[in-house]
Length: 285
Ligand code: NAD
Image (tube, rainbow, N blue to C red; front, side):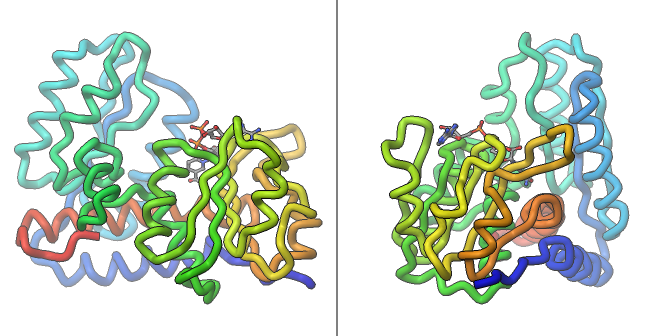
């Protein structure tokens, strides 16, 4: 069986176009504030990409770049100022922050209605409790890709490899919300291959190149590869793509699968955040 390749780039482009259309209809433009502490090159690339995408869809960008030695107090004051600024609909603190800063405390400060990364304890609690709220961008992008590929999530056996707060755990809740039967695997899981072979939906979010072998894929499964690993040969995912694609019904490539969805979902979350602030009864997520 040769799998359908799920074109994340095309889906992300469509989401971005939809956001741009919605923004164009608004009298007040939504605003996205990004905070990048210090000059980590990878983070600079990520934040630059987010700000460019923001401008493309007509969302106003506020690009804050405090120095690497900024104090916890000054960063706290910045987040509080952005929380109370009506021009700012969403706030994104680019992680990781330098070691002298208390990342968890800073994240907690972000007002839940402006938490476009969906990573504050309030947003995580709302998701775990099955209540409306802003959802983390990468896992939301995975759900959109499954829908796009026509995967029937209800009742499906879903196996997620990776239990991070950023991807694995929130994705487990999103799949439960859609009535999948969810198993979350991690570095201590026994017989990982056997667990993966049960999956109708197999998601890899690990950060180990080609960990998921072709023969771990159940014939006809949907395989979503969140992994981004930089090797000399280029970017590779957490799934051994070629043999996995022989068995899967649908599979995401790396690059061009989940990656482009993250920024698209950030833009959508910013639009949702603006709607919530304008009308607290607006649908959340
Ligand atoms: P993380 O390091 O926080 O978590 C990795 C998880 O994998 C952990 O739960 C760990 O228990 C598990 N794990 C590690 N080794 C394992 C093994 N041998 N067998 C089974 N499980 C194992 O990583 P993360 O932030 O969730 O990111 C995972 C991958 O996804 C990375 O490659 C990252 O670059 C990528 N990522 C991509 C996007 C995107 O936009 N596409 C966004 C976030 C993360």
